[in-house]
Length: 149
Image (cartoon, rainbow, N blue to C red; front, side, top):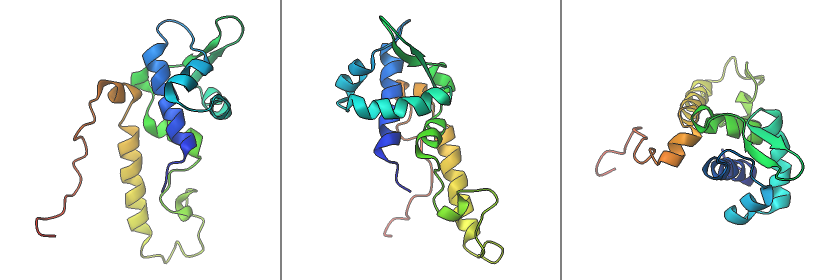
């Protein structure tokens, strides 16, 4: 699984808005400048986030964008599902139930299901506020290789 620039830039844009919105809306050109990202590329991401209820938009003078919800209510998992479509580690898990002719007999399917569960739990446990607070350092407590491995 690779997260595309669409997902990464969406996350950066939302974090920028959280840091800079104050009580108002932020112009997309300002976000693009601060993040060193093409405004045209951000314009392709905005409708997805808007439709999903993650962004709120205002047109006209002093218009722009702001988060539609507090940063502590928006998870990285939600953002990536909107922008990436699927964050499943293998194609056969893009749909539930798995649409693979071998799924009934696939002995590796539980491995991929477990990986998906770990990915989902991890990404859904991180909010924009967690990132802004810098509270992720050392938060992963997964398996570590044994010494000498």
